Image (cartoon, rainbow, N blue to C red; front, side):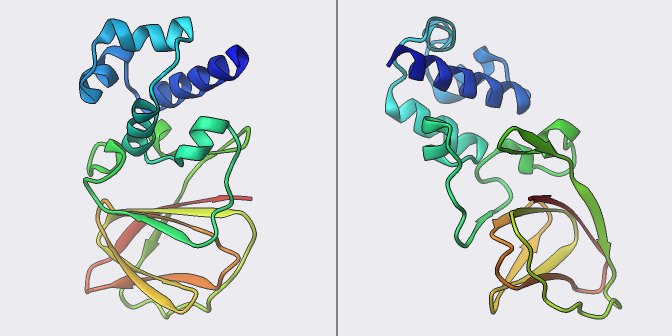
Length: 183
């Protein structure tokens, strides 16, 4: 049990650091005493389940994955609207390290994509892994498994790309988004 708690606190500390937070900053946002929070990370004290849940929600990660360290299969998709979930959804002011996507033991770096309103709609594609799109400017339409999801600046979507999907520009201005494909 002690080893599992240590592994959990290591995952939480790594997540906090990757997202650019000190222990004190995170404790303040969670509304708990900084010394108490620090003891969770350094001494391996049992972290209350509600604190783990708040941390998972704050940084937009899967609760079960944070708790167990095992990646859950993403069966469909998950949309995070600007201002919800992780603070890194703010525009502008993204930090490159915040945009890296952790998949297993690999950190996948993002690819910047610009879509023009005059671009022809591409064929829907499928591939393995998981995909993450973050809209930096404009509006994009993600067509996913016969659904159309409109994303605006600051919105993100995670989805299972084994389903047919594609992205296109919506509106009369170019759209810019980051995509990360974790194979």
